[in-house]
Image (tube, rainbow, N blue to C red):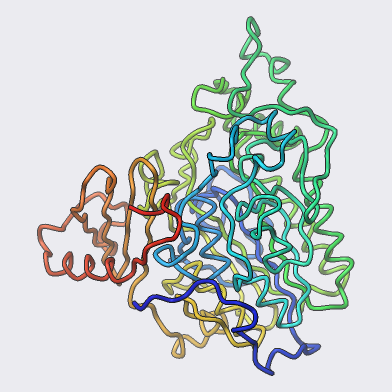
Length: 504
């Protein structure tokens, strides 16, 4: 694949005359959860977590069985989504906290010095989904977690195509659902919560880990997701007479495990008593870890239901596209327990197989799209697609020219015109984790993985996904010609990133 320039200046790329706003333009809401596993919702097989509103979206629209994130961790996955460039071409290919700034992991210091928070930024004037939709005549908003540019950088939401933003700028701050502050556009909004480091906070000495009172300090006055939802609803209210593009980038259910009491009690009654999580695997302690993880997902499902009610009350629902997905597979730390929930569904999800890894459990994600009157209800698609395809799909929906991407619009699949759907020759991922380093490629039924690259490994493992969804049988020795072909495609798909931290 030829090198494609990622950053396209506004003076270079101009949308065609087709971008003139029409009254018929649909509103578009893109909902992305954080660390939600393929099997964590009812319509994708969960038997323990209740998600009636997400399940209703699935019933009302189309669900994808082979949809992929852009990366197995947050920041690079969102970069792929925002720019349409796969992780071999993307500006951001790993989480980079820019440690040269100072005490970037000290929450007290970040509270005092905003320059210490936030992640490596997108370049100025990058053609993002937000900017493309702005130029198509949409009002744009992003609510939730960002992670693509520290405060004051060129990578903040308002500088990358979003008219309004409310939530966490820094994804590390999103490790607590009771943060000391959030951001409204470019400004900090201080909350009535104390600074509490989610990575060092522990139970007080001498407290009983089975006593609910021992965990009181981890729940404070203002739950961030309530505030984010209120701002999101305000955005919908203010823009109901204009076409809007809304990205709801919730941090749920990423650890720390913290959820409203109502839903925690519901699942304690359902699951019964359980061993507490005392913080041994990072993040904040939690009295009822299983109940709280499920509660975080059901709480968000309830919010989705409230949003749909608002859309219907304002007569917007019938002209609104809703897209629902996750940014990667389920996590392995912070008291989460993906094997107990069967969070990977048909895929393995324990450490080494879910988040941070390029096995199916780490990168294959649920994806649901509804569009009343356009998408046939209760349909399912096995079309192979991913985050890089969202931008060209939205361009087709908005009837604007799409900038160069690595993606292919899946609008024909949404509309049931499968005979017109173009297919990827292959999908490619790279994740330059600072310790391991991973690459993966999917071509038809074949899945190739090279792991431990930073430890000197260059040998590909090969899996036949038609026979081996759990990737338990390496057949590289039986198909050397396939290995050679996939290896060559991997090499062609990689361009050297500017940031040295993203290089292998």
